[in-house]
Length: 393
Image (cartoon, rainbow, N blue to C red):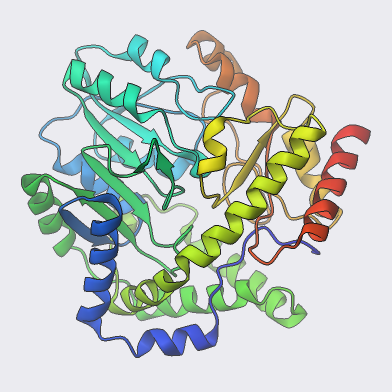
């Protein structure tokens, strides 16, 4: 593979530097960082963003319906269902691929308890409109910020708007595991902290696996490291396929905290590099009329993933061809070997539910490589392969 989709930016040297950080110092550094970034008073370190979302719904006083977007990874929806709630999908907009606030209003009823917003690909949802709706109907707003660390909406960071915000310490924080739950509610914090304290820590075997995977992923240009990495993926995948979130509820380990604290130091540099690449993608794809999801907020966002929607794209067919041509691309999930995510809502169900834009976008979406060391020549080559595949196939 000539162009890889993602680089964890984690080396053996990073591991050694991480291990030198004191445990309490590492946790304090992470908490202080997120507290200053988003302004929330209470910060809890969790095993993952998915765990943080699950704890969020367990901490609410009641169950009911949660309105969210259907254009997302399945793991963003599992916590809603497995905490005893029901999902109600609202449609998206084609300009930013996020939930449409106008459509949320049509879905609210007496059973609605919350709106879960998902800032897809680092692009912020229209939070002012969503917060206004939530206040009108006395609903909780949960922000899924797994892909939007460092993104701002109208000069405020994502994660600062909702009642509860959940982050990943992996996707755009370059850690090997972990998540963040942030809130201003002392009662919610106390509940989630108590639940979290009852979980066991991750096993040493899992932590070793995560460390190896990230080191190997970061060196996949070397053939031997790539081969070992692929073997590890196969071994781990077989064990995890049938696990529910209940079966994966753990506490973040001290080593994962140390690594996350060390990797924070890279955040601004790496995110700035991704932003520069993302803007070049936008400009070049716009010139060639190959990208329809161009919103104004794209120029104010960081890009942990770069999603391209266009009617000419056939996700299933073009994903395969682009990978065969040396361009590692994905759909909605970052899943090597089978990058296409099946529909969460079938075409017929989507039409019946009024999810017109979701129906239009899902099968015409691709996420491009976004490793931070790409130069302008390489970006041009990537887009050349992309353009030739989309137009000529």
